[in-house]
Image 1 (cartoon, one colour):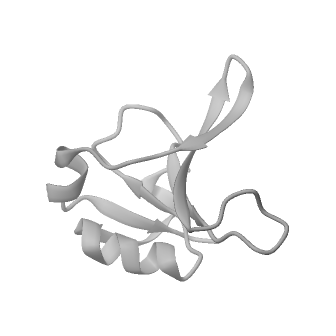
Image 2: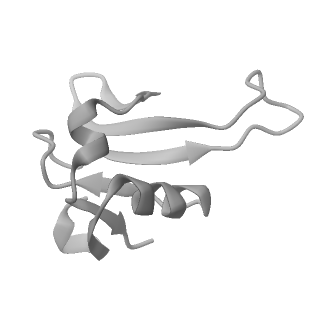
Image 3: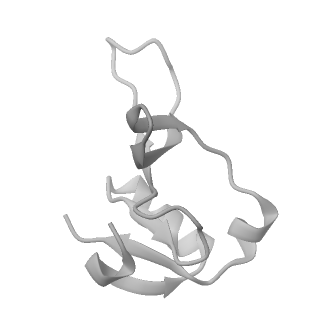
Amino acid sequence: MTTENAQTKNLNFGEAMEYLKTGRSVIRDGWNGKGMCLTAQFPDENSKMTHPYLFMTIPDCDEGIRKLPWQPAQVDIFSNDWSVLDT
């Protein structure tokens, strides 16, 4: 997953969040890891979580694909290099 696969580019964090709320995944050009992306999880009645949250997918780790909870850093919030992934 790279920006070559991205449909909409050069978004700010607020714009990226709007896409996340619709179930799309987003990436940042400024991230070091190849293929890292964010997705929102919307819990249902079978979930242990009760509120939506963001998680990052990191492919090609030693363990295979990793998925972990994510919170934005200040640099992420103020960046304008967010892109929406094609699905």
